[in-house]
Image (cartoon, rainbow over all chains, first blue to last red; front, side):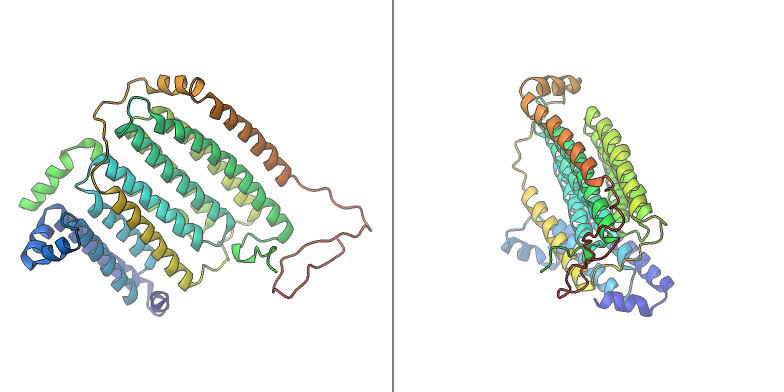
Length: 202
Length: 204
């Protein structure tokens, strides 16, 4: 809330430079995690005992994630450009969370990121067609999951790819019917604004 | 300098994971472009980029058939339908004059999205997957085709029935209605501005 107010009162150049500074900071955090400096820092400051007490001993990457999120919210409150901060923070935390993992977990995490972006877009956007685009994004994320399972868990029978084929089929049907519904609503109400689709309101 | 060497070694260890990170970054950034771009027609075209990078990911996962199906169905078919729908619902292609959602809603949606991601990540992260180290069959398209015509023939047929039903339903829904005869009165349901308003009966 505060971020949007602050963005309006500041010049776009300033907001942009805040976002750039945030990008550099995120690069530093990810670099520190990738080269193992963050681990050294954790063991030096005695934070490892805290992590251990929460049964999160090998989860140093969560610390990098929390750091990135805290930095991001601080910069957004200071008045950086929110969309760039969100994108940079997502990419940075995706790197920090998956760099030292098995490829399967990398693919599953990417699918989770895309699914979360699709969910966010579905809730936030007010154009009905954009909501449908976000749903397509979420279905694609699920497909990445299935194909990754076919590659790393079940490479002989590739059942994951089979189910991905069915998901694609259903997605095509959904897109056709959904867009037809949007068109017919547009013809009746002359708007595609989600907030004004209140025909069922009583 | 030492750290730079380490980063370089990390990048060189595996071409596959290097490509994965490039494609993943592209797809995440373009996905943000789809949901945050102010011009909706542009986000419709950015969607092609997202589907293209996901096609690249499928190629990395050695799913050649699915990669090409992704390209044909999503990047061409569905995006085309979406762009046509945009042209029909937003004829002058103006910047979307719709205001964005309320900041409180945006914050709540962001919280829910981050929470969802963290839940999935923490449940996926423990390494007790029963992984198979076997390489993928070279001609897995053959395996797919055989499975679709034997074990999975019933869902395959149902998928075709579903597509037919969706096709007919979409045509019926999107078909332009006949204009009413002049002088004939009929009801037109307009957008209800407030909850107290009644459906407006108007003469066409």
